[in-house]
Length: 499
Ligand SMILES: [Zn+2]
Image 1 (tube, protein in one colour):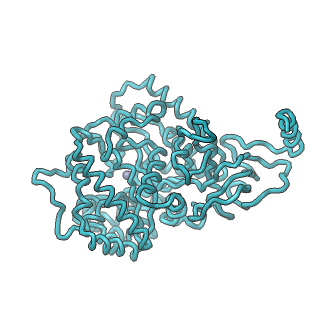
Image 2: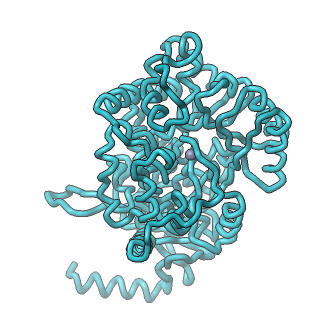
Image 3: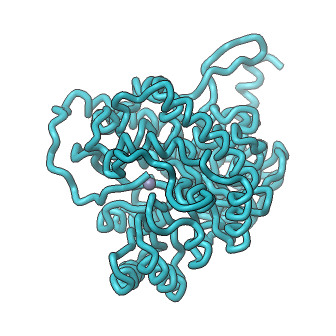
């Protein structure tokens, strides 16, 4: 058909149907996402192309829509790929870095533009986070769903119990802990169980290890410390005498030499015990990656347009900024970390193979990890660990939802589920890089061009255009660079966050 004929036919069709293209920031009584390939998140391969019908905040049907109604809103998918909205299992809401201000909207827009529709916040400023959660729920701000796992803890069993009761009183969705002695840890886990709160544990180098989480019923292990520690034949890791845990360089340098001290047989037993106790694992491989290749981490191309100056300043090596430990980082440190990753990958595969549940989180805002970009990198690293991309996607959707106890309505493209999805320019199974909000190089039909990105993110039925969000992020960053003096403006009351 001649181009002009196509245009006329298209115009006529639009007139006859009377439907409108979906607009950024709007929610509709009925929204038809037309002509998309579908990845449900359940570990099944691509189907379609087909249509997805959304009414307000719910998916009501997957299947071709023969006749559009007069007032339908429409997204023309054009054969793009629909995936469930990604869930970021390890996020921190941040409006400052190292005391320098940075608006919440910066990270919220980056997350949405990556197709992330749910955050499990594992520790941030409580009051501000509660406000954001309420405004997100009400649809007042463009933001992913927010679940708050608030910092609990205490030096005594009674303090630990009180902290959990206070979190329940304030309406927390769960409890985040780190760095606890055994007695208060066990009391905290007991109290959380009684109150029905899930617990995410970042184990430190401390008295307790994952065996205590197995005994006490922790929901998920964040990162990885505490797992190899539980498999070291006897006692402590072989730290040099001058090692000091308060020194960030010592801490991260020796972390990279931890997994090799684990006894493989014991490690298998620990992994099996985690599976038996239903303790999930959110490894956040991405947040340690700078340790195996610091130059790559410091030179990510999207920093040019999208790195906020407050975050950029925080990333600069400085032992007072948590995770900014690259002072005198050596070839040997990187080699040790690469070996550490290989054992870690194998442990993750074995854990999953034994029936364990792996989640996907990014922990961005530290160690050269940018919001959203960090989660995509996590997908790539889980593929590198040996998982099929279909399963990696399941980890980031269905598994994450189940780890949060939300598997009944989040994490899938399925009838009755919340209308949380991302419409992607390209097949993420072929290349997770298409999810980077900056796009990626694509070679197709003998031509190299800029491609990828999430075209639309739909959260709770609200439609957001990726390009619109990223345009806003670029403008916000440019303005901050013009006006930022890079003088600390007084550190906020955000607690120190471990990695
Ligand atoms: Zn964290």
